[in-house]
Image (cartoon, rainbow, N blue to C red; front, side):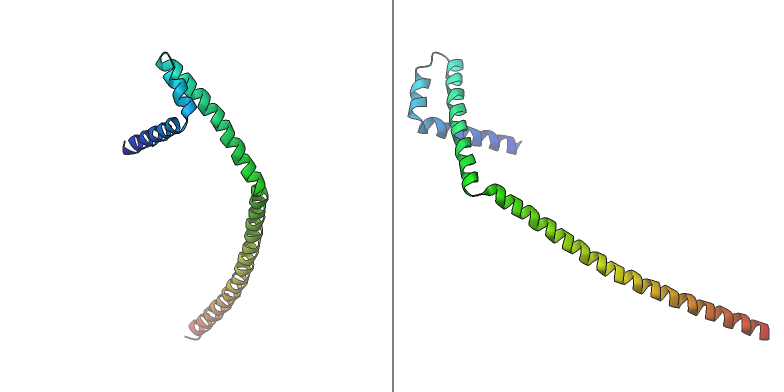
Length: 124
């Protein structure tokens, strides 16, 4: 519940700052007949100012080549992933070979022990 009150307080503070900083908006809202007309005026101003902000953000992103940087970042991640994948496969491949060699030695040892045990039991 604390998060909701914090959110409402933040939005209210932002809205108050917006109204206090826009003289034209304040004058139009003072001339409004009722609260619904004031809300429509506020909505109109927020809509037009929001479009202006979106246009500026778009221009800023284009100026700094944000799309190119994102593409470069994606390519870097893909290259890093493929090299890491290759290294892991090489490492695991070497370990699999070593494990097969150890298993083969264990089988030979087991066979030798069984053979020695059967030979000893036949002599006894």
